[in-house]
Length: 377
View (spheres, helix red, strand yellow):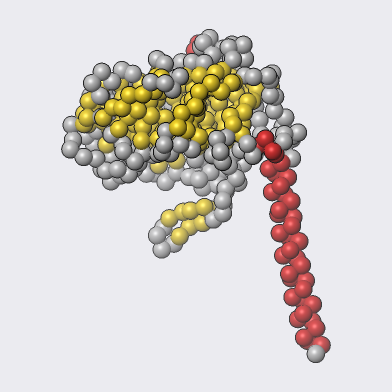
């Protein structure tokens, strides 16, 4: 009987301890998501919604935007392209033509930078890159040797900025592919900084800013972004205004497959981003101090950074459509273009607030400058 009471007491203590730890974890998670020490600025009407269009399906993605036109690729039908005006009134359907009968439909990426476009997939056993002209939408294969990459953004008609997996370290790296004559790949093992495993902790979104002529990379799981020169040297290491400086990811290895995977959901810091002119736009996932959770349930928050001045400028809301939140977006001139579920929306950006949108100080960013802070104006 005495031993039975001891076992019951130990069981109660164990259950109580687990419950206490769970409570502490829940409170810490709540504090992490809600009680951040940073404060956002929401000035009056920096972005006003102007147009909305139902695309019927949610398989579209933004393949490019230029000269008052928006180019939408379709993940389900990779050779189909929609061209819309920024008022979302005129639509043209285009069928891409390739010098090949068929392509694997795994993860093709369509990128349009008039007068050229690219259709690419660097994740399959036999990767491909097609390049064509927007005057006739015909493309030919220009990749003779297999080069592997997960994401690619055109820097110009002959160069692609890429995110890839290093065969040497098995970690994410940034680089570029030169398509002049024969395709050549150059990688930088210094730009992305490993904190946990070099794969999940360094994951993020790659952009190319054509106005500043810089590569821009935003991390998913930490409050950092990278600005790099065309030669893959570091120009700027900036910080977003939240406080998550270390990626909160837990990685497990499946021994039988020799594969790594997330052992638990990672804390997303920066969901999506875009860059245009002097600015970086970041869809943050972390509320700041004094922010209403009711608003977070109805809208996505876009934080705006000035890449030239290395400053946080302000934030604005992009409102949900039904229960759907902002998925991806792009900025063209003074237009914010977003995909929300199966809808596309445009917002007019205030020229007063975005006064540097057309003032592209490319020379101001020519000399390397490594920064670890973002000033708040």
